[in-house]
Length: 335
Image: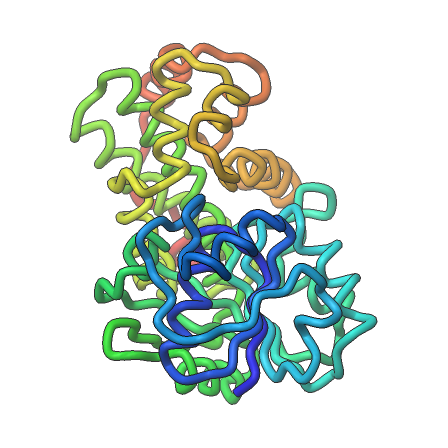
């Protein structure tokens, strides 16, 4: 198939390499001209995914319009904050039958919309698939066995992506619970930031286990409020992605959290990580969504205070630990 990958970061690079190795004709749209030249000359993205060599020929573009000519599938591999402008640009160049596959994991700050909702607004007739799960580009780019989920409201399109993108090292499951998959992918970054701050403060495994477990509970509560299937959060795009993001040093969110826990500012942490840290903006989106739907999310709300109101992380932990005593499982899960 003719597939365009838009976004020259690590994840876009890993996906362009994977689907080109599968035998598809790949057009790779990259805004950074230096990255374009690097891949053309060295067959790798030395800045964002060094060492992951392209084995098949792909076409590199610095012009979006040219990159999507004849495309049957377009893969969005840009940060959440760049999705809307990219879709608006694509609207002028693509037909309504082109499948949009999104890799980013976030919630738009201004609208509080999930990426599928943004796409529905701008490209209402184009099929949409979210590809999500525990999948560090640093491992996918080197053919380390990985499993993810293709989610779409129409299982036909999820099945197409499952068939066309699956390899012997990249296994794809399907799910029609688009809300749950998107919420899990977005909110796990918040918990990974918190887990990183815990590491930076010098706390231990007990603390991280508590954050992950109670964080999963918060993710599920938000998902339920928005209409997700609660079972989705027990799967790859919930628990699976949460585990890998909270425990791996490949995780930008965990690394940024460690730096913040060590006393560095948000700007310093982002600069040192060197790529977009989705969880920072998602924390703000989640905070506003929790207010809108009147959902109690203590970890997410405490992290918001740390990131946006300069609350001391140790003080935030103390507040969490000394909250009113309660049952572990709330009635919401039985209603």
